[in-house]
Length: 436
Ligand SMILES: [Zn+2]
View 1: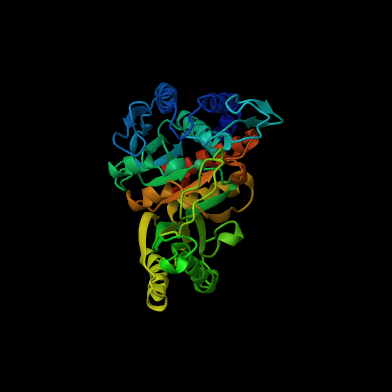
View 2: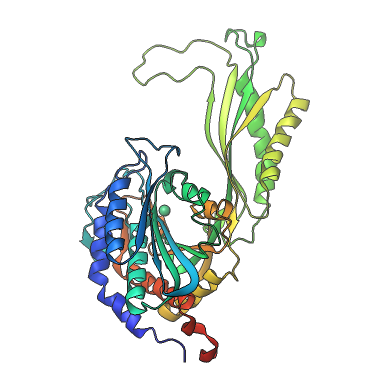
């Protein structure tokens, strides 16, 4: 006899109004990042709620992290509920920050208004709805099975939208995601209620500068034009680098399809005299530019390495140094994030897979993210590989005007999360006496 979860599922249905109110409350705390508003307020709110439900909580400020200041302190909340028997710990991690509003809103972005079965607001899907769903899932599970094994943790962390250094990275560096402390991590990012996100591509960001020599613009032969040197770099990218990247396909299930190969964006280019303010009415001076800079954003695959990716660009620049007269450059790495990819056989993956089948009656789709999210810190710093993103909401709604979360989606994914807890924290759910 498999475990009967009917009353757990019914309990979550009965908590629907609570889930809605919780999501609205979270949306109404305007945790805009940057600059990092209201982190303390949202942590206090979560602290009060989770303490009331028997969790032990800690508020942790990321002192000294990028962005942390007395005006904008980076507060994180971590709540833990111990079971009554030894066992494993399941951790739900959500970021509490939201991005700027942008234009085009027809709903109050911090109102939490409900219309047509959806709750609207900045952060509704990314990811306060997922945070609320995980809280309801944990509370329902604890109420239904107070005698559970192991532990449940819920964290609300800062700064995911700006790299996570004041949030998950800070906690991971202090051992909060160490494998002896936490065994399973679910990040309820808006990946759709029937998809499991295994990880993300890597990212490598660098600045390249070419050099020349300033001279009068009427006699460019007396100087050396750094912009023309950069033109040669861009030509090299077009002729060599882009075709090479396009030929590399990954086995990672990255969505959308266009991101299933190596990609590179050129974020910016600046050469010669700085641009003047829009109200400047004078004409430019005539100078040969002696410097030109670009910033590149290279996203790479699990099949590539950091050294290969940076070495490939450096190799092309060195070719130009050999081929092109007076070509001089400098390259500076700005940031690097390794790819992260959880194995499909990892316990958290197979558990959530089965829960999706049981609750939604279909097999999940497996995906990987084109960009990075906090899994990078849990993997690299925490050394914890049993981590996925799974949560309600439509990824394409993230960061858009009139962002919303579907109430039914939240309820369904709360059921999937609670069902997963029964598999991971109740030995009777899959013990030998049940013939599993
Ligand atoms: Zn997010």
